[in-house]
Amino acid sequence: MLSDLQKEIIALKEDKNAIILAHNYQKKEIQEVADFLGDSLELCIKAKEIEDKDIVVFCGVDFMAETAYILNPDKKIIIPDIKAECPMAHMLTGEQVIEAKKRYPDAAVCLYVNSLGEAKAEADILCTSGNALKVVNSLEEDIILFGPDNNLGEYVKDDVDKEIIPIPGDGHCYVHKMFTEADIAIAREKYPGVEILIHPESDKSVQELADHVLSTGGMLSYIKNSDKDEFIIGTEIDIISRLELEVPDKTYYPLLKSAICKTMKLHTLEKLRDCLINEEPTITVPKDIAEKSLSAVERMLEASK
Ligand code: 13P
Ligand code: SF4
Image (cartoon, rainbow, N blue to C red; front, side):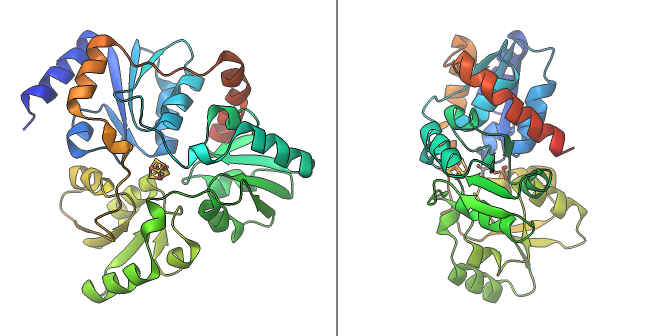
């Protein structure tokens, strides 16, 4: 049953002709009022399709809301807490991408969508964890500058016949770095025979010990289509809220209960209500950067069809 605050948010959203998009790592109470839930790729696709709404409320981190703005520069994009940043995205500056391009003039630049607008503006194409292999394989170049996540780069490297050069070289997600080989061993002992699904932002040595390496959206569709009833989940804890909402008849064990993305959790129902009332804080991207980034975003959407 929805709380009074959740009902107030839904009424406000209708009154303002707004749509609420939320990432799979949002708290359960936010997922319950969202119009659309998804991984980074699904949120990009949804953001591109929005035509009949005046306001897009983005419950996710900065790079996701910025991508929604790049695809919808005429729409008002608001975010419940403006401090919701992805620390990994902030590990690669536009200047570092320019420097890397000078060192490797024949390389293509493929950046994870978890990157700043100024870095995206220097990329040839973007990718997400759900389409990285397809995107890199769609490129003609044999050398790919890939960043900021080293682990996603390592994951891609094995399945493509190209040289992957990581930029800046030490980019990582602190949440997925928490998973260790020991966690896998403990989970295997505690839940014998249960499959372990892991996100490609985890260390390669941990990916290798899991049963499947999947984006958050990939985990959801894998579980929906599997005849198994139990899963060990190696990603941010609140993907389990999404799984319990959509596939409630199965059982999920977190690989690590402490795998929490703190900035994703900055959004609360109170802040969501207030941002709908005030129609702020807004997310924008400087016009030149948004224009320069658009082709890399669109190229990714085309390659992932
Ligand atoms: P997904 O695209 O798999 O949702 O991942 C986004 C993200 O930030 C993972 O940490
Ligand atoms: Fe960024 Fe990691 Fe949080 Fe995803 S989980 S938003 S990559 S810090």
